[in-house]
Length: 488
Image (cartoon, rainbow, N blue to C red; front, side, top):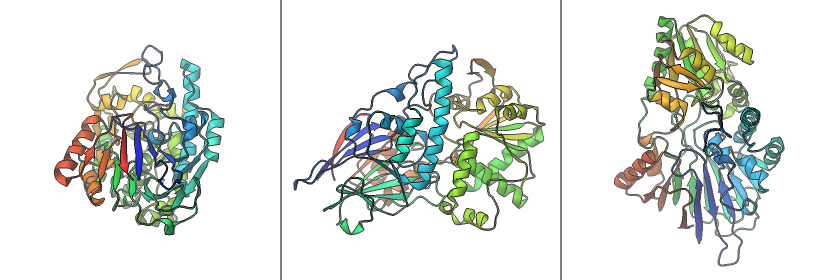
């Protein structure tokens, strides 16, 4: 049986995951299915952003462009995890006419609801200030969530002639790899969600990795194996780089805290609201509790991260045994002496009047928006400040420019001279590095083809070449809009 795989997004870039799998009809007349995997934003923001002139930046309206397929023909959407570059255009898909079922883990659905609500607030602000187009509205979000089904890991469900199953990707809470297996027989219909493992008679499988976790990591269980996959569609964010050792990252964080303590300065951490922030809170809590670090004032200035942390508490059973042990003994691993959760904008501005030294954890992770920008304007000119990145900084973002050493930047129309120390800890990234990605491919066995996606071109091409040279697999780097016929 032949299916067609089209890379509608997530190719040639780290953003906009959007893959279309058309199984076609079988020779026996059985209906096929058009399945969409992820539907993420094409840019780092939800709409347009103000440039230095106060006008909308060109290119930031990519998210409002039409989808390259008839959305009404899509039977089902499967979602790997709740980062915006994987879910950000789902309400837009619904707005444009999609009415099929949406499938993910239950935790991903709950996180997505929080992310959509936050995005609505950002878009409304941009629409009022800069005349940006709304990507979707509250009614679209409500409709999307009404179509959404939450599943447990390893509980298969049927989509016409395809069996679907979520495997733990170890990337963020609820993140999943999607294993799709072509059935040799089927008696179900699109949207059926009962277990039917008896229907899978040796069919071929394809795995969509979503984002692969940086295993092992402090909170989550390890990323599961893709063993037995005939085809892989996988990410490559760090396809050409290796993280620092895990034993070193916690010590590096402690050292960063102690350095600003000794300087009487500020440790400013732009952090992603899902997973990075919770890991930082967990690590700081652990060091304070075990006595390896004296308590220091820590300000969590990220309303979205605070809401996300509540979802983390709800799904504590998804954590690794060490974290579950914290909860079992009544110890909240995301709270500790010296932590202040900042609510209002007034409280955020008041942080600047609080005595140093202190730690400020604020969104957003790439400095593209959120409260971290106000702190960067205030503190980047102070040589006692350390700006510490703990996640990937996409090309073109303020975070990437600061990480690459720019000494003068424009933040919200203000020119800021950078005197602060700027450093990064890639060991806290939620993404697997080059060597982990190669092991991921190796663990699949001998796939017929590996599609390297979700990375900057240099990283994707490097990983594909390594896979061909060291593992002898057929690895390709698709272009956006490119289609492939696969025997599946």
